[in-house]
Every structure is written in C-alpha cells, then in structure tokens.
Length: 331
Image (tube, rainbow, N blue to C red; front, side, top):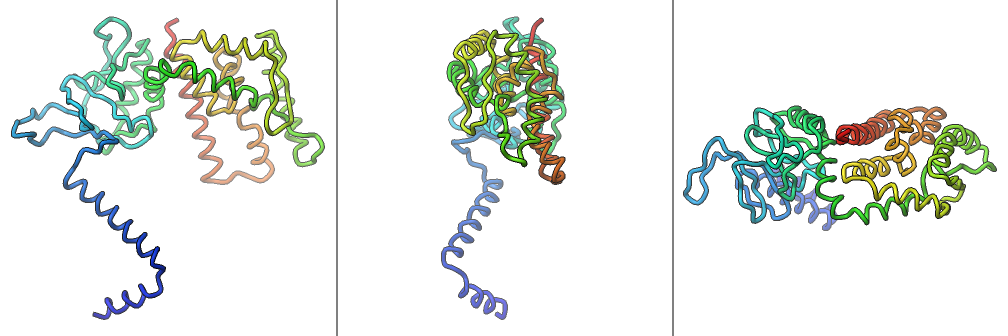
C-alpha cells in the first residue's frame, strides 16, 4: 500500500507525454519478449530457425534447417542469407557444424557450403565466388562465427561478395555516376587555406602527402588534377573525368564493388583508384585518409573510445576491400 501511494504521488509530477512514452516503451519491450515465446513471421525480416517444431501437422526432419520469412518456401539443400545481413543485424544463432568450399555446379566459380547446404545471397542466388581463394576466405568468416549468433559485422568479405553479386550488376551506371559526381570534391584535391594560423600546418602536410598521388594521376591519365580550397569543391578537367569514368566502366563487378567501398570509406575516389592500380598500399591509404584528423590528435591528444574506434573501423573497411579486390582476381 505504501509503495502504491508513493508511485501515485510520483506520477503527479510526470509530464503526461512522458508517461505515454514510458507506456509505449514498456509495451514495446513486452512485445519483444512475447515474440520469443510466440514467434511470428515479420514481413520485413528473415530469421534462421532450427526445425525442432512441427508445421501444419507434418513432421520436419531434425537435421534440416530452413529460413523463416515473408512468403518463402524453405529449401533443405541451401541456406539463403536474410536481407538483414546487409544491414549489420544479428541474423540468428549458428546452425551448422562444418564449413567447406566446392566448385559450383555449373563449373563457373566456387560455392561455400554450410554442412551440405549451399550458401545463397539475400535474393536467393547461389553465392558463386570467382576464385577459390575468395570462397575459402568467406568460408573462414563463417567458420569464425560463434554459437550465440551470426554477426555480419565480422564478415566484411561476405558483405562485399553480396554487393558484387546483388547490387552492382543492377545499379552499375548509378554507382559510377555517383562516384564521378563526388570526384570533384575529392579529399586529395582539397587544400586548407593559407591565411589562417590554425590551418597552415595542415596545408603543409597536405602538400607533402597528397602531391605524390596527384603527380601519379597526371602521369597515369594525362591530365593534372585541379586543387582547391573551397568547401564545395572544384571542377576537374573534362579529360581527367572522362579517363576516370572509362576506367570504372571497364571494371568487373567485384572490382567496382571494392572501389566503391574504398571510395566511400576514404571520401576519395583518387585513393581508391590508387589502391586499384597498385600505387597505394593499405597503410599509405589510411595515412592519407586520416591526415587532418591525425594532425588534430597530435595537437590535442587521442580520445579513447572515439578516435581509436574510428581508426579500427577505417582499417577494417579499407583492408577488407583491398583483400576482397586481391582475392577476387583470377590472375
């Protein structure tokens, strides 16, 4: 009784909207808990599920695994990656014991096998890697997964492979168009202004570190990139734009997926092209990408739980794309 009186008194001082928010949150958490007890298919997601139940009065074999999702028919000979795999959500517990590789049934590429099941992409296409080396690397990512859950953020090669197979073939023109649009605002072409004591050191470091890559691009493509100090970027010469655009058009799906991933992480298509052509290695690329931030760290110190995590995340993004690029090449 005393505790109830205290709660009533406390509620008098709460904002009504706050009470509604708390009530909604409680219902939401309760619904999540109820979902574990009474699983219902979510039309916007897929979940892995062990076949330890009976469906429509029919007994399902204990050694089979199926995918629960919107209006799908389970297959006992394959494992389809849920769409949530592409977004980084945990997609379910580990349901397999052994991970192997084998040549694709049509002889074109290599497949990853989870026990006896062929791994598929979110749109139910067989995940066919162009090389055995890439298939084995993706298999190693699956072998690393623990029993408590499959964590996509520990599988960057798998994610890139799905991108190369699923998204690039359909959106190739748009991918190239977006990369070329951002090329005019490339990190490598940007220079800090010289009329400010705060940015003078940064400009000196930019000139020192970026100039070799710019000279290489001029030699490689026959046009000198334009550098600028404007926040909105500059306008690159049409000849250079056409040369870079033609290079991207000649790439295969795996190469374009890797270039796009590097350019996105680096805010620089120039750095991505430098890696693609072998002009930059991983460490050199990371140094160029973090040039300004590292200068700030040198001046003000490193924030633990901030800068160090950013560095680790960037290293994973660049390294995985470079490894994917190398392993996907047949020669």
